[in-house]
Length: 52
Image (cartoon, rainbow, N blue to C red; front, side, top):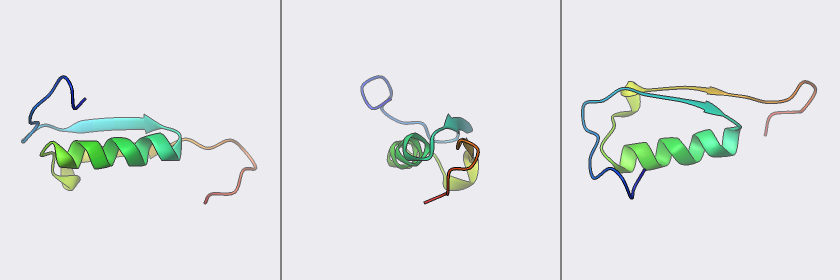
């Protein structure tokens, strides 16, 4: 995202995937100007795997 977008103020962002990827995407999006209340996400985990 950083290479293709210089600023994303005012957009809604939807992210889903494994927790480390989602966390990294949220950090990148906020650095590009997306407000945390405009980021919607779902962290996927496998069944039986403890959340960490």
